[in-house]
Image (cartoon, rainbow, N blue to C red):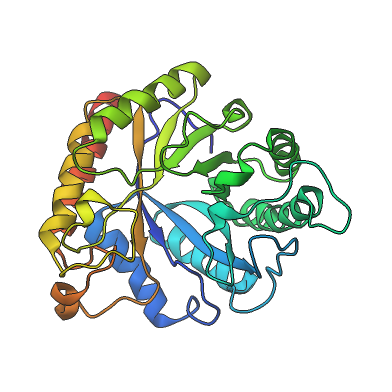
Length: 323
């Protein structure tokens, strides 16, 4: 599949964090089917994490638990295809000590006896190329080569080399998911097919941030969509949607307000080619517990039907323009 002017991603992220043993199950298959049924999506991001020990570790043991196995990844891709979905495969690296991956960082210049960018990128390249092969063999329409790696973004030479190696293996669409507020700081967008970012912006700030991002899209003349975007159903989260640890009472209205602001602002920007919302787990909570669930998933919450209606409208408009 190639990206074209008629591509629109009415998408949802599935399976985070990709814990071994949770993907090749009846519960996971049901979760995938419900995601398609309840949201009316046409894309999903099959998303999982491998763990390096600390932000300064240079080895990514992606074949080890708790990361899902290749068999589980292939099973999830096949289930998504069975449900009629296009797939973006999204392997992510996290830190086992709990540090956010945006803080993975090393000295700009090598120092003897210190961890080095060259060693880390060698391990990260092996990690990404492994899943590039899986994506190619499984017919994934898109591959996301990194997620919110803020401190790595400045390593332009290494990223360009990685993308060249990915393209020698994988023939689909290649994107990189930069973090919020970083869209105008990545200098190598020309090397990917599609620009994508994490859209965790406060309800009152969407217009200003879209103004800023629009300049990046114009500069690089690339398609754009939000690879992540979402908000917990928690009071106050609509003002700080990226803070998954924010303390507050469960509040489905706060989550709905976020989506109203995001979709309302983005619908006036034709260059925003969709969303891969965050996130839908492989094992869902019972629907009767939705009112007490304060996480990002919108299953059974007020935002669910709003998202479906928005996606249906966007896809209907696209189909009309193609007719």
